[in-house]
Image (cartoon, rainbow, N blue to C red; front, side, top):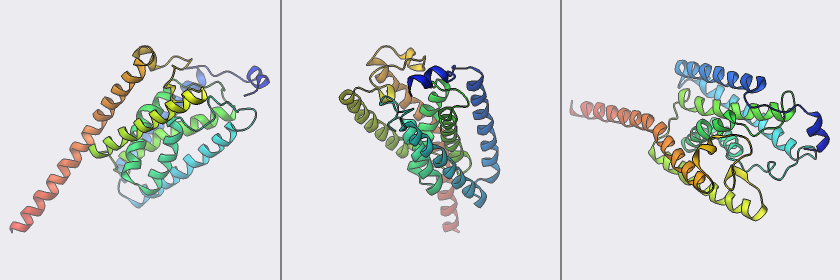
Length: 250
């Protein structure tokens, strides 16, 4: 972003009016999607709506990335699509369109934890109605909504195998981006230093301990939000097996 633009643009205020409005919209969307999902799970309408959401995520993600590469917004520290939120938007599109379970699990884990963290404590300078503000919130809200929709509407809850895949993929991303940060002098993923704005990382100690603590906390929380779906999957499999055995013994 150029100096003139920084001086003239409204500055985003964490938990200011625009932030509160975005959070309210997020909550309304989550409730609506859960209710819709419970009513239409497994229907053709749910699948069509999921693909519509995939198009919506793509429609806001691509312009945002293009805008970041224009002279007014270019910043090596922020422009490259290396944040997990950026990857989550692409995976969400693929998951909503194809309903592949590994992609749905990644969207679920990344969307409900890491993307939601960016929603609660955004590292954002521009305020409404700056295009960056609008596209930033549209992308992040849609990714969280996609995570909710994939599980509660399409029934693509994670299991322990997908949990392990998500942990491995995320670890590979962290190592790759950390090395990139060291070589280029950036801080994508806040793997090399904490963000300038207040965040949950402030509770986890100094570098590198906050990175290690974050890994433990995230892995534990992902396990916690995997457990009910894995338990339900085992229960359903047991019911199907018992029904098959009962039918075979008749």
